[in-house]
Amino acid sequence: MSDQKLKITIMGCGHSSGTPTIGNYWGNCDPEEPRNYRTRASVLIQSADTNLVIDTGPDMRTQINKTGIAHIDAVLYSHCHSDHISGIDELRAFRLRDKKITDIYGNKETIEELQERYQYLFRDQNHGVYPRVLNGNIITDEQFGVPMVIGDITFTVFAQEHGTCRSLGFRFGDVAYSTDFVDLDDTALKELSGVKTWIADGCAYKMPNNVVHANLKTLYDLNEVIQAERVIVHHLSQQMDYQTLKKELPEGFDVAYDGMELEASV
Image 1: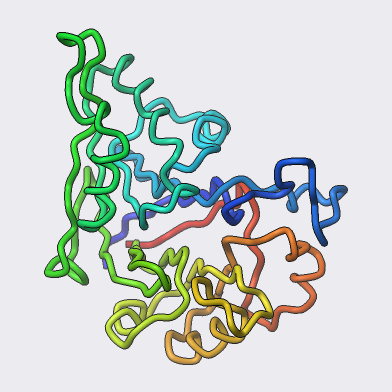
Image 2: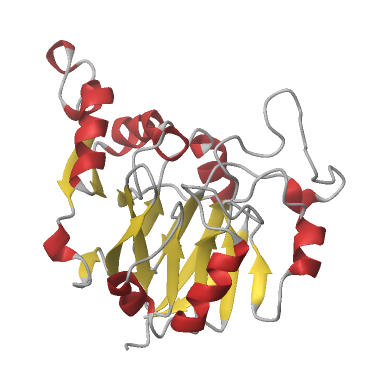
């Protein structure tokens, strides 16, 4: 491990509808607790020279503006569900201002879905009036667990079971990010071994039969193997009030919130 330090900002920790959902529905969440205000799941990873984003959900513009960053070097996609991709149009602003095509990375299913749904972002249109915005890069199964480098940031990728599809998890030194999974296989657990902080989907909360998201018991059981010193429960629904969940979690477990900042050692 080198001496490099990375800043990780949880730009959004909410599930697919955010909190409050449309119609100003807060569910069990206390609207007076600011950490209950949750935009859709997205994370920013920063070194001295490089800015990486994981997922571009519908709150992308607001999230990026809050961070104060002026450019993005690349986007990593966990999977192609709309709450993780539908802010992709916002990347056009960087293209027009910086005159630079943005590299995006994801598994084959995700990149193909993006190229189909957002064809206009992957090619010049109207004789260059609307220039190409994105360059798609497929992360293959053979690259899982093998260090990848973008700019000066090194990371590894692992596959996750998300019920209806496979999602990707990402490890940056001693911090790992696992959004949208219901379970992890032995290969993923091996890749997560030794992390100090694990940001993990706990959206199913106390529901044992959810087929797409992990519940708290699943996180407890998985961390018996992973042995992370700190597990940050992420991808939170409006049934998961910040203060209530904080009191329910055992030692070593914490609750994510929008704007939460962490440091990774690589």
